[in-house]
Length: 307
Image (cartoon, rainbow, N blue to C red; front, side):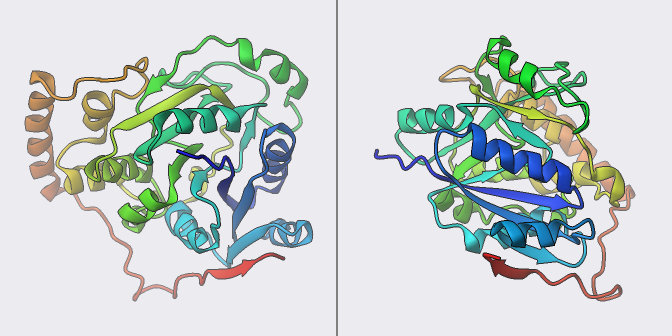
């Protein structure tokens, strides 16, 4: 299959201009190929909107934070390449990150895949898919770029199972097949495993993290500023299995990559039984769904394209 290694990189951002600048600078400096960068600006009260216009970056805009699901889906009409790559604004890509993904896509030879880059994070992390702790700075001011560039390739880590979180890449036909990210998860908690579950249902079986594609993640969390959806219960009610069980028994997230990994067995059957019981018990839990008709109208997405 002939591969065009150019990606449409979708970046939602919410008043995080300094990290966004560093992220885009790293893409331009450390990528093997040129890519289409498309940004959704949430609110932009810190000057983000003016900056993307000045830089001529394709973008959409909303006057309020609309969450990652609406942001990503709103960016989709601006995509002009075959591959959609979702990236957070607090990430710094290391040299060759995109070439490693392109070579993996070419080796697969078809479009039914979901790949993730391998994150390097400063703080300890629960999942073995991430290289952590590997502290090269947690702020723009403390970021040791030179040391990261000297050491990133020497950090030992295998390819791994269970691609879910960004940076991740999928063919746009597959994105469209499953309808992008599910907006019922707004502002976005558990939208990542839900997207993987939709891909699994659509026939994707390659969920692979690529070790040679390395991206430093500052973990500059913006989730503390939003009212979170109860995504774990939403996922359980929708799919009939807990997100943790789906990751552990279906995707095997974080485990070393195997070409043909068995899915199922008694452990999955037991977890499915437990999940059904948990789903039944959620009838006693209130999952508040925001009624947009009783609130102010949602922020309108402006599709502005180039500045």
